[in-house]
Image (tube, rainbow over all chains, first blue to last red; front, side, top):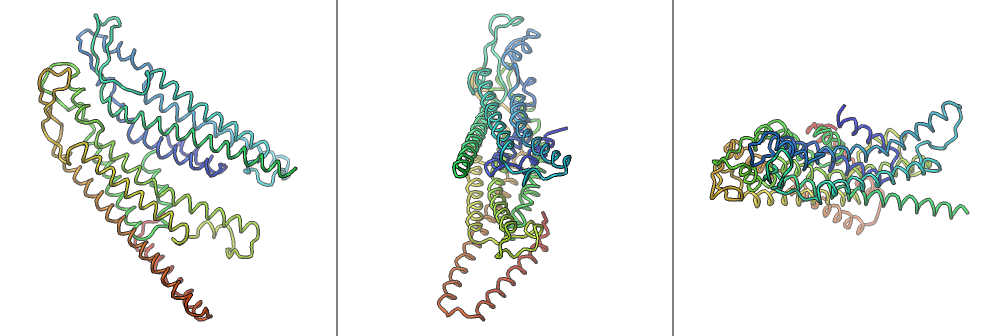
Length: 213
Length: 262
């Protein structure tokens, strides 16, 4: 079980997506998943070992690290990728349900079970709204947890058992910050793609409904 | 999910590339991505652990490392490879769109559609002309821009392509000036020069491909202008058809010779 599973999942979703949806899948693969696996994972690999405090008191480093990094950036990034890809499964399930129904009753209910109309359109729109919502939730979480998207070189820590205030130094802060900004930029790009897809679908089907009348 | 997935995606684009494009793709995968994964990552693997400063001051090493390596060579190369491979996706999307249109025509039962079945449409190789030419040429142009930008960023950030053995650091909290020693500087310099050399080769290949496409475009235009001046007769149409057949045959021969199958 690895990221290849997510990749196969998203390839399956690609079949039932609109053009903008396919661009979204391509952006998630190349700029988020690939960058995460090829670069980000390695930067944060030894973050705990390389977190250094100016103190000999045992336990102080551990406590300070835990205080400043309740959930590591890289874990939040991975969670975000998983959560954001999952709503697309709703569409896959709905299409599978349609195909099952046709097989069960041995009758052709739909001209094309994969075409985005009727109930499938609602499912697709809901998946888009969920995707966008989750992206925004994670961006806000990042912002709130780490006081913005900056990573300082030095943090001052005064939690027990550290005596008084202690200087602690974070490893590779600049590199981490560059990749954090990259993550935020790609998230925003995905939000824009999702919103455009949403407006495109709503517009297309309202025109269709209006013309039918 | 790894570089193999990128290989699968780009392999599909390979079918619709020119011969120079296929050579570029081979160079990219063998001399850049494979070297990055198999060798360079090991060389840079222990870079912060083995970055040693001549001080007992806690935090000085972290700060000096961050000051001299704002973004590691390895990460910069990984980003460069990702960005440089991305324009090929534009071509893949355009080809997919064309295939989709042809399938739609076929399903409508259009008389103009000359395909016997859907499989033929799926396997068909589109020639690089019309709007696909513009997409392909812009993708090469963007590739060139990305390569150049990353090479310049590299040169700018590290003041050249050499990795020094010793760096003098006086960032706070280091007291006064402190000597810091980089791990494996010669090996890193060798790999840096190698990657820069291969990047330059890729830039040259892209420039050559761009010139080839532009030449082909202007030749085709002048041929069309020349043909339209003469009276359109049956023999001319036969000739142009024969020429196109010959071009297709020679292109498909090049496919098998280069042997980079998708």
